[in-house]
Length: 303
Image 1 (cartoon, rainbow, N blue to C red):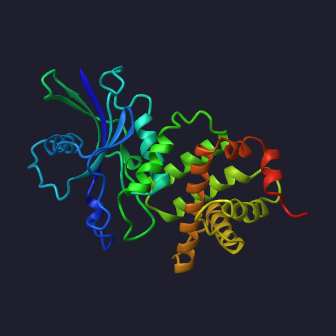
Image 2 (cartoon, one colour; image 1 turned 45 degrees about the vertical axis):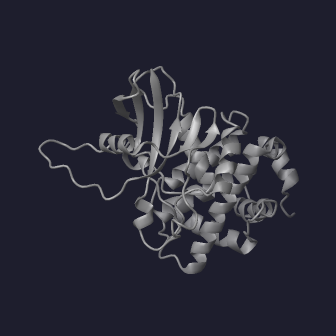
Image 3 (cartoon, rainbow, N blue to C red; image 1 turned 90 degrees about the vertical axis):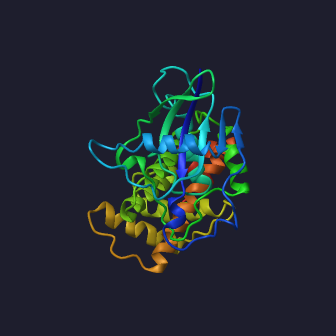
């Protein structure tokens, strides 16, 4: 039996305000092989529509609405695990690959349209089982308006390198937690929750002492950023980030973000993405986070 586990990335993001013209950097086409069992590309249009229909409960007695969007591309795992037969992505390999794609370049891809497709021996679809990711955690948001909502060719190649490191059992616990904090932040639309999760993820990477929490963040995070390609996160940025983080953690509101605060958030998120990517790809760098002494030695605090 042929089995595919899929996650469809819709083209809704192309219609949510001004952004990059799709003709300028086209989304993945044709098929791009991420691994022997994973590819990125377009499903057959008819099959994609069936998946979208299957993941949208119609209710009873309701007229089917006209869908205002369709498939942009899909993440496909084939062959997918045959057991349990009716369980989508039972070992989370596909889900984790999508989470890795957000490290490379955040997009609006969600798990709303995740499903298992079963084919008959003649190649026709016999059954579509929606994935078990439901509720708010199935959706995704990005923090930048007009954001390009697909991976360009360079980013696809970088994602392929990350997928080659699966499973991520080699990661120190600090990096593993930071990775999933980033994924959780992608699944909320509220910037106050995003801010708390991203700053907590960075703290998970650099915090070694029970005291001097502010210094550990404002000194070490910019120091880490200084070792990463394309990251600009100053001590002044870190001080703003930690002040907002503390206000939120102590029950105060974030308030309206001005342009500078928005830039700080975007830089903070970029640092988290790049440090986790480097730790996945470079074992020596990852090992720095394996023990507190390694962090203290690499990024010491002032006396």
